[in-house]
Image 1: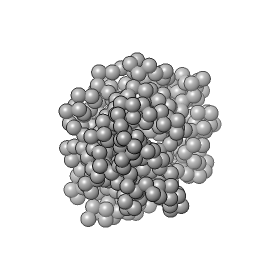
Image 2: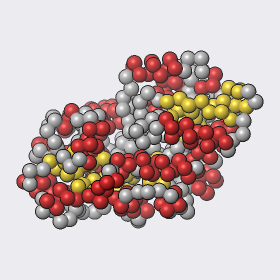
Image 3: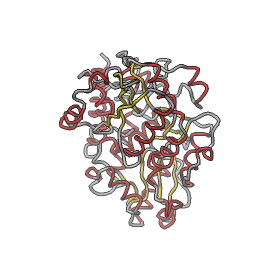
Length: 426
């Protein structure tokens, strides 16, 4: 669920691969004795081609007469690529981990049977859009968490994780005084550059007003409001205080993981998928906490993810649905998602032990924020439910995050976001 921009070249190359497949992509084509459906996936170091091939083969076994044709997005921005496919008449029959609101409003998605969703998932309406579930709520993430190096904290004389924002600033000061860089930032990738702002806005704005995003749709609140600008100003203070590494805006996401896990920085604000990258050899050196608030209250920026959406245009909705349901309940898929991609499973009536997974203590501690009773809000900019931002706003938000690393013009950047929001919702 990591969003990046697609280049025109990548899109063109990806579409070229599908030349001649438009019939299958717009609703399935009859294979010898059965049906062929197209399935848009993506690949990462954790979710490899082998994972997708195996999971697809297992799903096909449960749906007689079905063949799945895999389409791999040339970037992790599935939404952008799916739009390109739709525009060229090649909209897939099944689409993995997309943002439902982007396509449901155009009538492109088929909702799941609510009784099936209610029977199988812990939060049946966790990613519902306009009262309907378009992707099964199979997993969740906390975006971001603040991961920290316990040994570096101890070396700097820090004996407890910060609860308040003042505590957090004091921790940063202690780390710098001990000659350490407090916080890693993969600022070279737009989504990674936004993580501190996602944490602060989720904690300070949504923590006090969980309905803020809905109120923004209604025009009752704005990014230029004083409370929002005050939250954003905290990020500017962190930058000016030197809390991030030198040249952070040029650090790529992959390098930011290596920098943090190798001990070059003491903390890392990143989505809980980072748990899949915690080195097993010294996993006990790492812990996690939430972005601190002014009063010390705990706010968990939560996002319920899911598996695949079903095209409303598919020629065989019964087989498409059967495959999607089988894939979404397959324990083997969860094992890979949990161990390799740090996903928090949301199947009803299951514990971690039921998935036969080998996970670190920091994973277990982090997962407790999901299962415990606490204040959960939509992770700002990452929700796939009614709190999802309008199409295109995520890119504008990422751009503002990068711009604010070097600019004091908080009001100007927030005004740009308001303008982009208003243009997107006309």
